[in-house]
Amino acid sequence: MPLIPFEELPDRARLWTFAASRRLTDQEAVRLLAATEEFLVGWTAHRVPLATACQWRFSQFLFVAVDEAAAGASGCSIDGLVRFMREVERQLGVRFMDHGSVWFRASGGAIECASREGFERLVDEGAVGPDTVVFDNTIQTTGALRDGRWELPARRAWHGRAFFSNYLAKAR
Image (cartoon, rainbow, N blue to C red; front, side):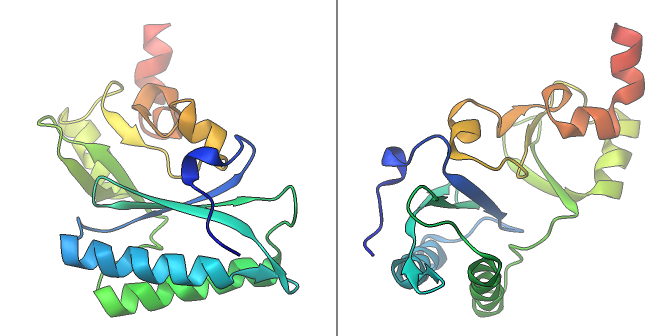
């Protein structure tokens, strides 16, 4: 099935966010997008083609989305996506399947990645705070992405509860 332009997906489309452990070069990004598009064109659930799209942002974040109105992604098809991303990691030497890290904008605006423990140290040092812009890679729909729930101040994401609960409680 041909890819759908990302902008044409409905807000309810299911979304997966894959965050690269580092910025990709332009050449790496071209390889990633070509491989991703090839995978998505053939992606099926129980032999039914999926209506899919992908988008690449900030040289570091890959969004894969499925309009499940016609056919939903099944456990097996999601496993296929995970296998594909593991192979991409191997080929590019970049982690995409790291759910234990925090992506955020440093004071100069550059995108940084830290382990949760490392981010907590930055909190303790005062290097990041509740207004630090973070990337909530747990959002699950294209509507959440469009509504600004992906890149936002930590206080408005799960990061606020996890790292700033004491600060936010005092602010009330």
